[in-house]
Image (cartoon, rainbow, N blue to C red; front, side, top):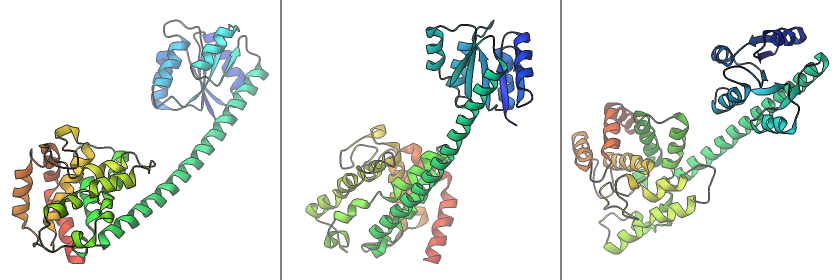
Length: 335
């Protein structure tokens, strides 16, 4: 049985409403806004009947308070009012009510209007569930595509196989230590997965060169940040997707590329990916050098704090130092 919160400044009107609806719905009467909000903290009703003219907190103020709170903003509201002028009707609808009923209320009218409002609410919930299901399906497809693209990037260089996934995992660990919420952390994972997508545009003779790059070759290699951003900027399903690719080689001291951004000018997600990317590079054997020792890696991370890296990000990274090395060591054994 659906539940209805009836808010009215008259105990008489509350009894009338409850008598009219009690055979069809659970009705909780509240004679003031304060009582109503105490009830709302314990239970979410399916619908609210709200009187406009009340002592203290009136119906308009209650409605504004409901709509400003994410916990209650989606609850269906029907106004009850003794006024039937156009201004009152307009104000009711402007504030977000689905309907308004003029007092004195006829039982048949009240039952009919409440029933229709709840039917609309049920349809809305079903559509929302379907939308959420479709969104999850699209997100799964998107993530699968991103994983495939990341695998394609890493496959070009056997020395960095799995690099994109590792950088994404480390980035998530850092963000968690910085207090990021689940939604933003999930987006960061996908952004980090594609941070090196621009390497698709770097010739093999440069990308796989076993010796030091010339200045000209280094400029071509640096351009992978711009190429990656240009590839990703048209994908709008994931917010800020191109920022990881464009800015993960910027430095906190302003000496990075492609734009020479400094400090907090660099998007925080790129500052996180920069630390994760550099850590994985030091942990990996490359064609031009062997993996660095754990102590050397820690020294390099601390030495780069405030220069190459954001100190806050380095601090968050070091919080999970032992855990990250456990993960990294396990991958080396299984790889």
